Image (cartoon, rainbow, N blue to C red; front, side, top):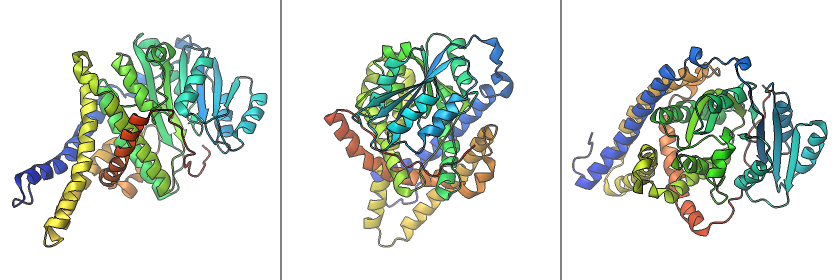
Length: 419
C-alpha cells in the first residue's frame, strides 16, 4: 500500500518493501509455527521412555568467563541429573574474578567434574575447542555457565542421534527464561516465544536452521571434527558452527522438549550489547558463507541466507526512509501517519503471532499470562532491530578483515532466581 503517491518511484518501492516485508515474514513464521506444532510437536509423538534406550555416555561442556556468581549453581544442578552416564568439563577462560577458586572447590566435591583453567581470555569458541578435545564421549552437550538444565533435556537431545540417523550433527534445545520480575525480562520472555521460537520452528519445517542456541545444544563429535570444530574468530560461535555443519550436509534439529533455564539481561545497556553481538555474528556468517550460491547442493539453505540479507536491507531502508521523510516533508504529520499506519498493521499481526507462539510454549512454561503486558513487543522488536543492525554492520566488516580470537566480556545476567 502506498501512502505517498507524490514520492519518487524508487521511494514508493522502498516504502512498500518496508511495510510488506515484516508483514509477510510474520505470516510466514505463524504458518511455520502452526505446521511444526501440528506435525512435530504433539505430546503423543514425543513421549520418551528412558528404559527403551541404551543411553551412551555424554560430555557436558561448560565454558565460562567471570562467572563466580552463577557457576556453582549450574554445576550443582548438573550433578543431580538422572542421565546414567556423563562427565562435566568446565573451561575457565581466563576469568579475572574468583571463578577459578570456586571451580577448584567444586572439583573437590563432585567426581564427575573436570576443570580446565586458561590464563588468557581467548573467547568461548576457543574454550569449547579445549573442552571438546578433553571430552571422552562422542556426544557433547554444551550449555552456558548460568544455565539450569532440565532433567529430561539430555534424553530428548540424545534421542535424535540414536533415532534419526548418522547424519544428525546437532540438536538445539529450548531456552527458557528464569528471571521474569522486571519488564525488560518479561519482554524478552515474550520475544523468545513469539519471535525466536517461531523462527526456529519455521526453519526446522524448511529443513535448515539459522543457528543452534548456544545456551543448550548437543553435538555429534564426529560432525564437529568434520567441520573443524568452532570458528575462533567468529563472535557468535553457535551461529558459525550451525552454518559449517549444514554446508557439510549435517542435519541440525530443534527439540522444544529439551528445556534449559537461563538468565537474561535486565538493563538496557546489557540488552543492547547482547543484541549487537547477535547481529554482528549473523552478519559475519553472511560475509563468510556467500559462496553457498555457487553450489546447487546448498539450495536448501539459500532461503535462510536470503532472509538475513533481506532483514539487513530492511533495516537500512527503514532508516533511510525515516530520514528522507524528515527532510522532505513540510510537516511531520505525514511521517506520523506513515509510522502509525505501519505500526497498527504490525501490532495487529503481532497479536496473532504472539497468540500462536505462546500457545505452543504454554506446554513447557506458564507464559500465557504475559500476553497482555507485551503483545505489542514484536512490533517494537523490528524498530529496535534497525539500530542494532546498523551498529553491527561496521563491526562485522572490521572483524572479518581483522581476524584473530573473538574474546568475550562479562554479560549482564540479570537477577538470579531459583526454580
